[in-house]
Image (cartoon, rainbow, N blue to C red; front, side, top):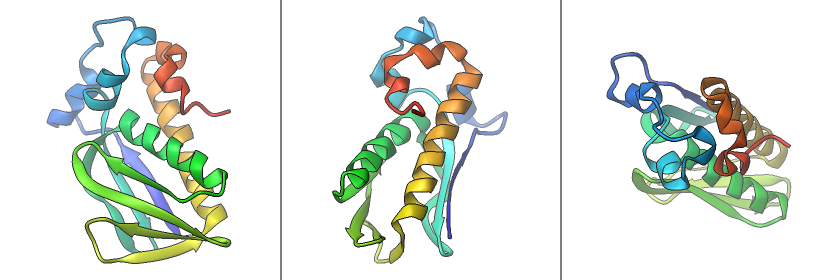
Length: 154
């Protein structure tokens, strides 16, 4: 069983300003650096079979994680191993294909867990859909931003 989700920070959280502060430029034109590293901080949680892969206390920027997961999803879809990481951390989550299973491991922790390839792909794809949806609900013009379009649902 996999859970991969995120929450927008609560009012009063310093990370909430990454959502509440108005973007100074046209959202369609906001650059990748700002989107990846300055805007839209979220709490992310990822658990697989009660093993904490990403702590729900961890804050990351949503666009950076979505782009990393999108790249990992494309690699897995083409039969390759993949990994994704976090700008704010040196940790890398590795995804190794072994037939119909994916082995998930961390560069910083000793745990390793496996799950069905299809279940992981569904969770990653749903995360990307939700990320895109929340961002474009917040600022509809982001749907036209080429960086956001890189993880847009097809």
